Amino acid sequence: MTVLSDQQILDDVRIEPIQESQRGEGVVSFGVSSYGYDVRVGTHFKIFTNTTSGGVAIVDPKRFTDDLFVEVDTSKTGADHVIIPPNSFALAATVEWIEVPRDVLAICVGKSTYARCGLVVNVTPLEPEWRGKVTLEISNTTPLPAKVYANEGIAQMIFLRANQVCRTSYADRQGKYQDQEGLTLPKMLD
Image 1 (cartoon, rainbow, N blue to C red):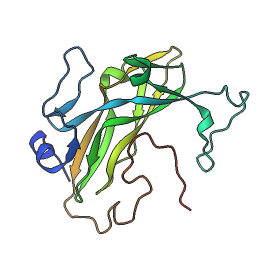
Image 2 (cartoon, rainbow, N blue to C red):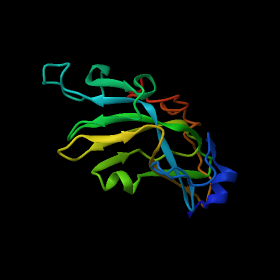
Image 3 (cartoon, rainbow, N blue to C red):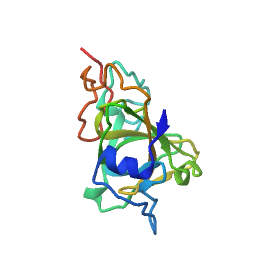
């Protein structure tokens, strides 16, 4: 396996909208870097809360309900950020739509700017031929409220090219998160 360089990312991976060089003056950086692509977090957030269930809710991935969240859309509130409560969690989606080539796997890691503030970003690998906007899981591990800036960098995608093309891609098996248009909650296959 090899890591794709900036030019290979521009040539081989579909990212829309794409920032062809890293931009960062006055914002958390985003765009193509030497060996990755720094994605931006969008404006729509779902922040976990325990107020809707009388404080006794259980998060169950097999029976996930939308009432565990408070929704915030910064494009409607006019704010440039959201606040994630202490020791809490939020879901959001990337601004960018990504299409992974059949011989590539993408791994996402959080940006150091947020990691140094106690914010952890988690995304499972983007498998070969996965496409869509990436749902981001953002954890505030601190005992303090934390800001996340909408439309700015949040995580870096690292693209790995395999030595051999896979036999079955995410598209071939009609993966349940294929073509997601934005923030997508957990799904179970029927």
